[in-house]
Amino acid sequence: MAPSTVKLLGDSGPVADSPTYDLVIRQGDVAYPVPWARDASTSFLVSERDTRVLLEQAGFSPLLWRDDAETALEWFKTTMAGSTPNGLSLGVVMGPDMREMASNLAGNFREDRLGVLSAVLKRD
Image (cartoon, rainbow, N blue to C red; front, side, top):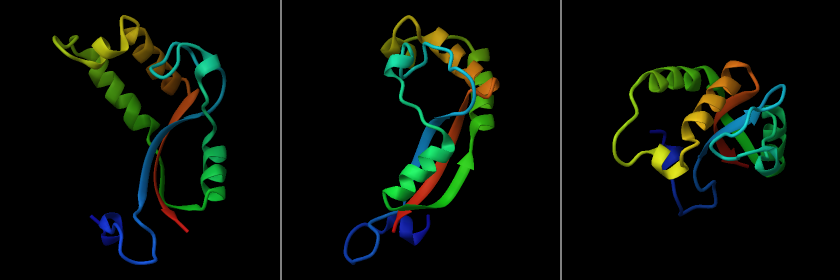
């Protein structure tokens, strides 16, 4: 781990590097329901470009900026191919619509309606 990642408090420099992992809107209409919203009225996604502008306006500079949509899609392919887990799972927490939500989310990645942004930021 980089020293700047574990630096916490003690000098006038940045507190720490800030990792983020977020979904971003790409093109077209998102298929709902998805894990964070049942419909567009409660979904507040922005594009990757707008995300970067907002973060820079807030005083952050990217150390790492990466599109992880393909990685997420591969994870979905592997996970959806398996059997439904018994016991406590995300499906129990999210409710009976979880399979539809996960399917829609994977479809949104596949059809380039959503992207996955992984970034590490530092505060200027």
